[in-house]
Image (cartoon, rainbow, N blue to C red):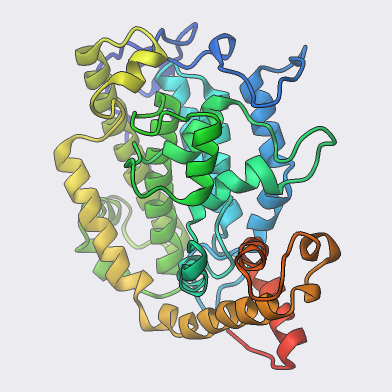
Length: 410
């Protein structure tokens, strides 16, 4: 154990006052925030709740959705020996939501909207992480391929069946915009079918930046996964503390913890390092975002969307260092032989499930099979693609074993 140094005094911000280690939150949301009263509403009109704002209802609907629950058993980083400790898509989404909500509070944005977008950003992921997505995209290429972001939109607008009066969750326009555009404007062509068809029906203004709540949620995603992958990677032995000491952006923090505290057990070393790195990234993000807001002087959420560039972000130097850290993690963790070992098996499971179910759609549950056309046609392939995308890792393996009478251990 060791003493924690006092926090340095930070510059004041238009969103609130940062005084030493304490933040005094703003009394009301900023003029450039997305306001519930100004929401463009829902595709299917509903009476407003007397106890919750429209964005609070969106957040609650996402949390109670089937797709959200399934994230508990979907891979975050695909590792063969992944146990109960390591992050899943669900725990990742919760960490992103916590950071997004905290940032929104500091920047005087709508916290509930930022949280809703953060909680929904990974809803469309397949089983087996990016390996599963690559395999499903390849298997369904002749039928439009697969993209997790487009599938997330389809989930919340069509595939969730919880309400008698409409398909999907009937989320507000602002939450749907943030879900689709949180990483920035989308090019006009080519658009993936779920996004193109929905946008033709109810335009999400795909060529513009989203509101600041969505921009903050996207940055929270980067901050969360870089930090928790350092945690998981060290605990899994995919890289060493000495290697991390030489890594971009985080290496200096590791060395400072070692100098201040001496020899620590791994859990405490990770905790101190991740806390320092995360705090640094958040402080830089707040500083840079407030600088951009002050320069642009947006007077409404609409003016944020019309701005030519993102208003939330990191300064250029930190952004470059963050990209270098991501490269370190890519080389040491995501492409580590121990992580890559089960990838081919996972892809095989997804490809063969697609082939088997496309040829035999009656193997799916009755409500899914009822949506199919003839075996092997485009309508059936689209249903099979959506069905497989919703599977958890263990359900995909169980279904593969049921159909093929072959057990695959990843």
